[in-house]
Amino acid sequence: MKIYNSLTRTNTQLDKKELMIYSCGPTVYNYIHIGNARPNILMDVFVRFLKHKNIKVNYLQNVTDIDDKIIHKAIEENKTEKEVAEFFTKAYLADLQALNIIMPDKIEPISQHIKQMISFIDDLVQQGFAYNVDGDVYFAIDQWEAQYGQLSGRKPEELISGERVEIDPKKKNPLDFSLWKKTNVGITWDSPFGQGRPGWHTECALLIQEYFHGQTIDIHSGGIDLKFPHHENERIQYLAHNQKELANIWMHNGHLNWKDEKMSKSLGNIVLVKDFVKDFGSDVLRWIFLSTNYKQPLNLSDDLLTQATKFFQKLDYLKKKIVFSKVIFEKTQVIENKDYIKEFDQAMGNDLNTSLVLSIIEELIKNINQLISQKTNFSTIKPLFDQLQLILKTLGFIEQIEISLSEDDETKIKQWNQLVLGKDFVKADLIRSELEAKGIM
Ligand SMILES: Nc1ncnc2c1ncn2[C@@H]1O[C@H](COP(=O)(O)OP(=O)(O)OP(=O)(O)O)[C@@H](O)[C@H]1O
Ligand SMILES: [Zn+2]
Image (cartoon, rainbow, N blue to C red; front, side, top):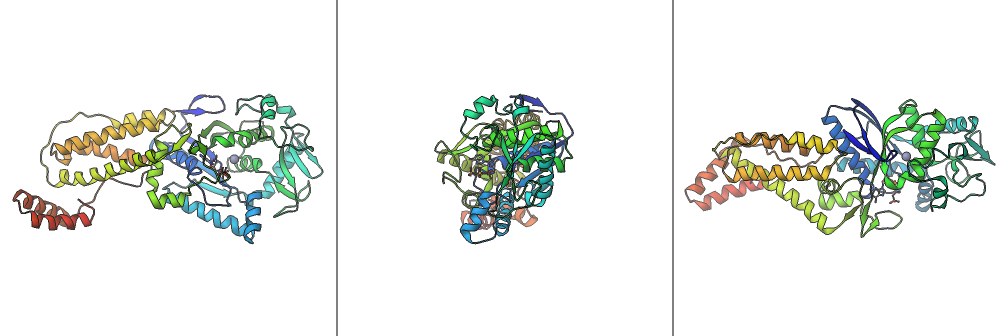
């Protein structure tokens, strides 16, 4: 399969049977919004597809539970940082579950790795790639100028003129970034550099170093906003520390926008995952993300919500109609034996072309509906139906199209059919309401 690689700006072939994957997780100081869910749902669909192709996955994600934002929230709410972080970590895991996301093999809170981060930073100082100025430690870019900026596709001088470089008179080069921050506000640790806290960018580099034993992993993913400076800084310190690339492929998802602006906590234009799921269900959000190429920005609109809702109405209609084909219709016919799974695999194997996959699903549904309208027995429809079900399951939708019927249900459906044929509509309606109450008709 091919996956677009932000580092080389080309599609990269992925033929291995076992993959090491890392994804940047949330900073746990708030509930996650549906924009934050985009990288999670993207990776969930990807991991499900890899498993469907019998590719083994070892997938790690971090949780940033040490951060200035958490400290501020704790002060604001008169709680400890630990209380804040634990509460929102739990909320995060509950949201992942509500979104039907297969949990990564490991979700690691960074607070459990501070000692190792200190020694990672100390290694960089000893190697001559980092320097300590009065208790603040910075990564020195000067020896890495040829490599730095490769992910963003920008030269160091272009990065400097960009807006996200922190101005700090202690730095030797404006692009140098903080590895250790001297502070006595909030939770701090002792270190060879003095009292303070490690910086965010070391977190992911260190976890990959530990969990994957300093190897080059296959895939590193995250939102496009993390490309610079976060991923650039992760990559360069790993390269310096280990003399090897952190990841072969860097995957970045585009933003979820609301009225053409990034959905973000700082702009205050957010919809929380837990609220969205309550109102529309998680399948609707999954469908919305699948409708657009993951690299592109996605504008959430009422129109898109309506389209997604209609799709699930269509599935529900199909689910109910299939009952007739199972219990009542008798006609069998020879149909074209099209391999939709092959088409699905090809579309997904082409850098996760999920919008094409949705059109494959539409075609399948249309074909099945046509056969039902011709009063075709399920034995004819089953090969198509099974393919549809496998595709929906591999994409991670909760909604299934199979209704399991008891013997009693089948008898009732047959009775209802006889009553309708005999034009005894009053009795037929009574049975129908009974079946409708069970969600069968
Ligand atoms: N609107 C969005 N669309 C897609 N991905 C997003 C969006 N906002 C954040 N992300 C991604 O969510 C993940 C979690 O990021 P993080 O916890 O840093 O969120 P955040 O940047 O604090 O959110 P916010 O921007 O709302 O403050 C990252 O991979 C980030 O790129
Ligand atoms: Zn990261």
